[in-house]
Length: 321
Image (cartoon, rainbow, N blue to C red; front, side, top):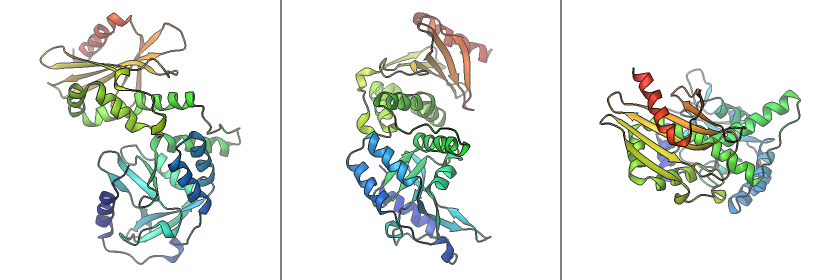
């Protein structure tokens, strides 16, 4: 949850800048009583049905976005920052939800979907999601949900039959798992590098379990315990560290990972992230890799489990030679 005191400090810094006169055309009020009621319903009972109902409501409504005004008198949306989870775009469902202090130079009245699209168009390290009514409801839509909403809207606009936002519990677990293994986990690794691996070495299964649960949009549906994971730390040499992380065998979709390998070369301060992935062919696993450019590399069929580590070491050696 976003620390409201810290958010207030961040916004106070933003509002300390000289304020341009507020354009009345940018402060038109909006009313979203039905949306606000559904937010409270969802916060009280975080079920998939309640979330889907909320999304279907808010996607058709207009909201208010605080903004500063640049030299050309154009509004620049403000962001609020959580020290651990990144930057979020604040949106308000009515003028009453906007705090009197800190005060922004302008409030932009826009469709919620325009705000959603604006976040989806940015890199995740620039904007991590949307926070709705941060000083009251403090409801966060994380990046995976923002991108899913955008995907559905693009299909609707194309005239094709839109995919429903309704997910079965099994589909939801697989969706979250894919986002974690191919998104959140490598992202944190490439952002934090050795710092993350040091924490992983120290806390092992507790670290992976805690981080995975933190990434869940619907935390009540998080199904795992630390004992569902296995972390093996291997100091291959004075300069090369490899960590194998085995992931739960349940709730696996295609693709998803049986395990991942982190490597860290202390002489170059460079890391690599390898994946052992489930495929459509039973018994055939894929050895993959994600680079800092977020491109997925296919290294072909993975060897039998006992030979995986050696293949990973061979790939590391090939790059170093």
